[in-house]
View 1 (tube, helix red, strand yellow):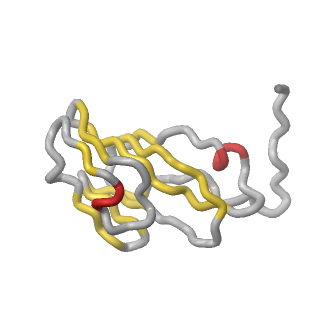
View 2 (cartoon, rainbow, N blue to C red; view 1 turned 45 degrees about the vertical axis):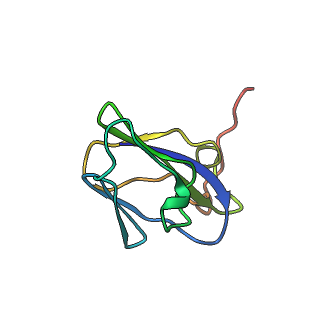
Length: 110
């Protein structure tokens, strides 16, 4: 499963768990197993504010985009996240909501 993330500044938090083709978002289950190979499901067909864009199955793998809430002091890794590729069931590790107290953000030479 490929989980793309779309960062949004908000006070809500998101917890993601995976169980096969089912995603559990903040305790609410979304069974995506009926999505056939090559099929696409628009976010508007899913009754959840966490999905954005379509859910697609290509090469047997689900690909989707979730909104990633973050705080005002979120690190760069949260504001510009890499896609998460997960093959295991369990809690999906998301980028941090915001920097921990006393945790300076690393400077980049750009």
